Length: 174
Image 1 (cartoon, rainbow, N blue to C red):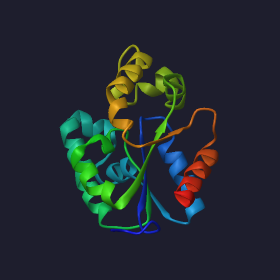
Image 2: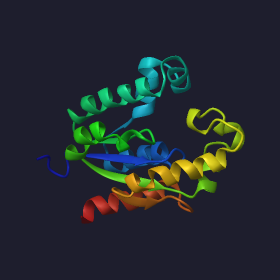
Image 3: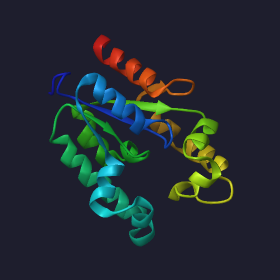
Image 4: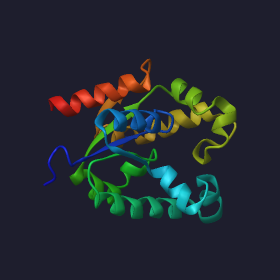
């Protein structure tokens, strides 16, 4: 079993909860390398909306699974995942044994604001449509039982550094 220092810290949660921003801050606090799974996939395969359009969601999820295997073989990373990545049992099988997973949470209103409102939501394949706030609420309701399996960290009314400090403190004390 990997000791606490070598274990990854994985940030999961819905889009717009701060996984990437908090991940960068947390990695700096812990003096670890930070990786963002969506950015890694985009650097290797192109923009996520184009992956969805050209190959479908299944192909994108396959890319996430491949990346999980790759990252599980490394140690002591701070990993910001795509919003659904850690809900995939295959991904969890690889990353959970070598990680401590935190789920960042925020209200639907905060999420919509953070993704850029209605205009920004249009660039998110899963939020496309006339009513992104309702889509956010529906997706949160669908995913909340799975997200609830991880340690929840509320990001509403906190800066990224405040959230990173909360997680760092949890890593030290438990």
